[in-house]
Amino acid sequence: MFDSSIVKKTGQIWKLGVFAACVLAGGACLLLSRPVFQGNGNEQYLAFFAAAPVLILGGMAFAAISIRCPQCGVRWF
Image 1 (tube, rainbow, N blue to C red):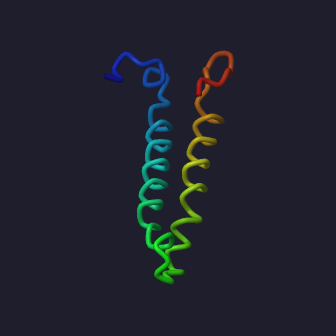
Image 2: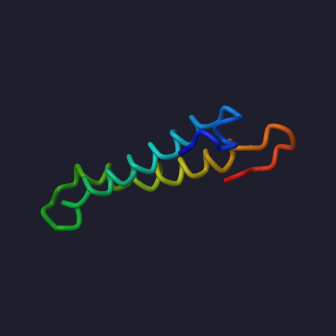
C-alpha cells in the first residue's frame, strides 16, 4: 500500500509510524481513563486522562512539523 508513497520514497515513513503510535496510545489512555467519569473516586486514572491529549496533539504536531519535502521544505501534513 505504501510502496509507491512519496513519504516512503523520501525515507520519512517512520515519522508516520510515530504519529500513528502516539494517536493510538492517546486513544488507549482515553479508554483507560473511563473510571474517572463513572464517579468511583479513582483519581489514579486522571494521569491517563491528562496524558491522552498530550500524546494525540504531540503526535500530530510532530508529523506536521517533521514531514517535509526534501527539496523545497514544504510541509506535507
